[in-house]
Amino acid sequence: MTHPVTDQSTDPAQPTSAATADEHYEDWSERQALAEAMIPIIGRLYRQNSVVTSIYGRGLINENAIHLIKAHRFARRVDEVELDLQDTLPMIQALAAADPGAASVDLGRLTRKYKQEGEGADLTEWVRGELGEVAGRKGSTGREGGEGRRGTDVVLYGFGRIGRLLARILVDHAGHGDGLNLRAIVVRKGSDDDLVKRASLLRRDSVHGSFQGTIAVDETANTILANGTLIQVIYSDDPASVDYTAYGIEDAIVVDNTGRWRDREGLAQHLSCPGVARVLLTAPGKGDLPNIVAGINEEMITSAEAGDEPILSAASCTTNAIVPVLKAVHDEFGIIGGHVETVHSFTNDQNLIDNFHKGERRGRSAALNMVLTETGAAKAVAKALPELAGKLTGNSIRVPTPDVSMAILNLTLERGTTPEEINTYLRRTALHSALHKQIDYIDSPEVVSSDFVGSQYAGIVDGRATITADDRVVLYVWYDNEFGYSCQVVRVLESMAKVHPPAFPRA
Image (tube, rainbow, N blue to C red; front, side, top):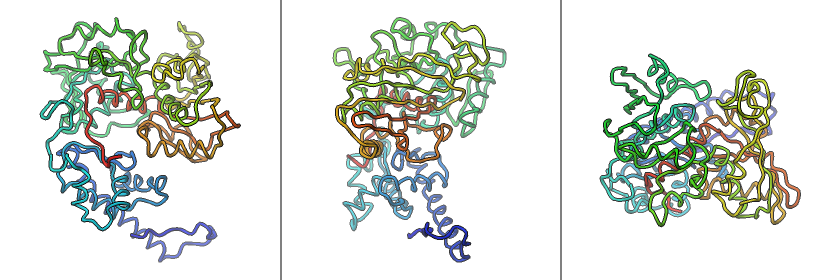
């Protein structure tokens, strides 16, 4: 299919001819029809085969035709041409015909590989060959440790900003239950209608919009039913007092997103509960707790001496945002030292109006002020990247926005560079490297913070803002400190649960 291209040199004052307008409309309608034809196949592959599809990292599950068309257009950032739905529709049809077991398939990269290496070959047979051991394995879970294993139970201890976003993601990724299964949330009862209020907060969010699906509440059973996922609501004031096996929950991972306990001793209270196997903290861990940044140091999830680490931290949103970019830069250019300044949206621990707060400056109105505060993110980098220990300082400014923050990395490198060189490198890293789920790259003169609400990446490099002066570089990294961080937490959970279906095409 040849897409009409508007001549950018044409005088914008000249009206578009009726014929050209018709051609554009017919082309758009054809794209919509192709995308609509793909949607049920994407859904069946996900629900029946546990196959997750994407286009250069843009997920396709539960999305509409417009999202699919935009994902195809995004491919211009990789191949400099728009991915054609007339190519990807036959590709996903061939994928469905292969009837695979659990897998993660990037249709953009698979189509690109076919054009480069398989052009002329029978598409269905070529796809079967690419899938190798998972072809014809419908029902195979892809979980480490053998076939037929049930999913891993997950309990959310706390149901605040991060807890509710984790719930949304886990419900959206439920598939047919062989991965992460959200079984319960644990909260302190706040009122007689607590359950209804909790469900309402899950259903509606002022920043992230409405829950995509249906939610029903059973006040007798204390459950929330979200898109077919039955979530038990457990009321408790004591993390050591819950018998999860009474609710049919076994070998669960408890995700503590309260931030109340951040050391091994405090979090170990969860492990005394029947039905709990491991604990994950959604805040920086103190003491000897391993701080895990997905994509960077997941090997620490399992200790060579003791096996699976029972208590882990998913670090902070800022640490997750900066560590992948710092690693990429250090690997290519070497980092001698630097300073990290974060411009961070206000959070729940600040006051809306001036009032007492035990922290310095945080008692002043978050909605009216920029508030200078400390951040431990720069020091925390060393837990994930020991080679940068002692090389970075950091500070933070809280600003009157509800979500999306920015990290400014002011670095001294081992060798000089230019904006073009380092931007090209970071763009390619975002698209082709093992960090493509953590790092995104944007090149636009018009983006602002609200454009990144809902970003699934740990951090997004703003290429237009990059500054260099020989061996000095300043990088600007946007991050959704709520949703992007929650996606990173889920990636850590997937590693803890050993849910690692093979990814295609193979590197």
